[in-house]
Length: 462
Ligand code: AMP
Image (cartoon, rainbow, N blue to C red; front, side, top):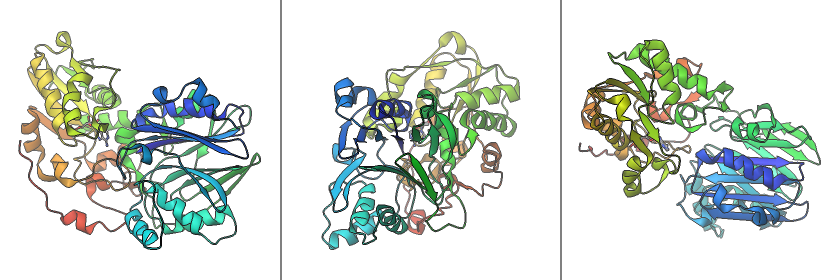
């Protein structure tokens, strides 16, 4: 999962990209970068770390020009290292080109092998680099045709921004897996962003979401749109964007994330009611669903956990040891609220189960007499190959344990997950015909993951 932002037609392009990336920081905290163009030359600055730490006035002043693209990274394909920081930036026979990618390509390894056998030298482990190699090797006459030829060979999830000396290209994969929206500033500049919250920050108006398979070219103030990629039998918009990833003040796939999450909470209260004195959320990801649960059940909502704003998303740290320590750094319990109470705790998902276990223990240590854990997504049983960091089945507690076993492991008095049907209703697509639900259902719509399904799963020990 990553965040991308681009702007064209504004004298402050790199400053605005910096602000846009700031608003998208929740989508990735490992590295960030901006590439700008002044019409002749592309300039780049990329570093490990957070947007606010990487850029300052002098670095942004070194990124002049009327157009820029930026990226915040959370590694899924390729390790956490500077060489994988984006936007990737290359010089090839056709000129200069930078690319920022959100998503995961499922056939990158295969394509990379073919390209390397043919002499290509890769500079990163990022799947995104495959697109650049394919583009540079294309014999098509124009840049757009080269890009389209490259994209016709890749499979998987991609929302892309591509910058050349004089144009910005935005593309969304034909399945529409990752979001990407188009906005416009009052001065006329066009803006592209993973989420609408980035548009809000810089006071750009939302024009529309890019359509799946759409390719948009902005050049000399003129925008051209086309749909040159093969249309798949159905869409596969990532349902996990609504469950966890996107910011609640964003609108994703045309729906308010906050409203959808609240609806998940209401549905959860219908499916798994509890006898309790109060409803609390695991902040921030569980807040909207907890409010929905409270409204539906009539059980009062209160703040029983406080989140420190000085640590990042702990899950996102790649190393288990840091994650382990991180929960206490991140959350603390409010004794006055919890003491002697039967508490419903709402969170968005259980992945490994380690966070939930610590949270339940923390709430009990603060004096709660019962803890009823409610999860606003179905059991996460399958790894994601399209850009969410859930790489192996072994690590997913629900792949090998029933809800009762998980309840026991996390030491909750009861545990209830929303059903897949209920989640579908909350996102406004009861049949889930336009969403990818692979992480819950194992129905992979893109790529052949039969092998992964049969992979041996080691039982986790409680
Ligand atoms: P755990 O069950 O200990 O692995 O962690 C679950 C917690 O991580 C939940 O509270 C989620 O909010 C959060 N989470 C779930 N999926 C992801 C993800 N792909 N990236 C980052 N955080 C996540």
